[in-house]
Image (cartoon, rainbow, N blue to C red; front, top):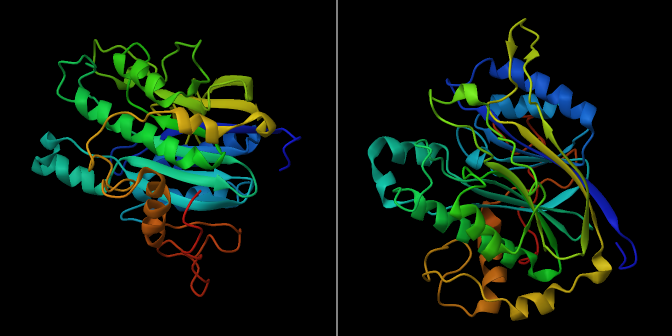
Length: 353
């Protein structure tokens, strides 16, 4: 992309309710979701809670318009349940887990953490100054986001980790679009805190529509907007063309059942980038990151290196754990039970974004 030319991208984001043994009609819902996404024809799809490879393969089989798939391999499915699908070639994929609170050392919660590790998946569109962040923060099933709640500090810490990750990934003159299930409502102090420390633009800032279907909540609980699409930087180097909600109504599945496609409502947005007016080098020279302890973000900062060395060294360190798929013919070879004999994708890429 040259500096004189703008680029327009569209993105959709959805928590897919792909939890093993707890999701109603997962195969039929996923097939219907794929059909809907094929009709939408957005550029990028960020999905959360794709927790099994059965569901993952359903996506690949039924989304032929999205041959480029980013995820990190884990068991029993993609790491963190995060999968990004694209019409454009992707590169430099990295999954970074969030820090968990001490109370999650409880045996059952700790086992859940190991299986469904929350974090952020980053991929870059090849040849474009755009990074894609797909994220899922820990849930707060009590529906209480006050400072007195025991999970408040955990959410606050994860938001700070995500903000630092955005800053470090974007320092090489990249735009960043961040979407996913944040599990915090717009009305909470946590939402305001994230806007303050990340300097990101909430594409749906004027919309207070809940993104969770109320019938999936316990009686008496109120549905909130907990899913977001943020664009970084927030200044006028980008333009939001449109934004809309997806999958608000029940549909008839192929098994004859009527159901929502997920417990969440999806988000879709189209935006235009103007890279000629982007000066991130000056922005980051003046920006002070949120205060945190040296080991609060172990997969990006180690606490001992200089600030300007952290992104390069951290990304290089995690390169051996990442999977990236730059060609349609390559991305089949990195998951269990996929085509034998297909070479694994390369694990090597430049040590910085």
